Image (cartoon, rainbow, N blue to C red; front, top):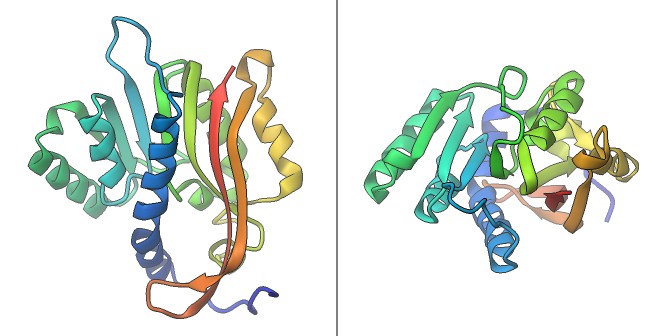
Length: 220
């Protein structure tokens, strides 16, 4: 089926849509990484994770419940407050650090995380900052560390209809450069990389075209 014609971009609608869909898809992808035994933190150290663009905090709390110390970032204060409340109710707030920051401004220390999760959030990095943000994410992984998250494809309406330069879609031709990094020790092994393009529905029940890559990647 051909993608629908572009229509005006509505950021609030985009956020509503992502909150409605991403919890299920993001948790399924995280569960797949754990079930495959991919995430093995260093001996004697508490495992560390970053949840970038944490939204309402479901995945942050899931990671904290699994024993991770979690850095949860989001640009929107209401999302961080929702994450804080959810972590407090779950009894894991002591393992969660909240930071109000966007992809353009965040600073992740090199070789610091066993897991970096970006559930449906990376596409909203500005296009001219995406390469730098992605390089920082890769470098923040420890050897053997795992990235779990999504990229939007170039035909995803939430990218296609966004204001110019405000969101980033990925083409199949760009993926090899994203996996290679800038050196052999930054190379990413593909555990899972599924491209999904199909018709679907948005959070309000209207017809919508999907174009998403679901990725589980491990640093060499």
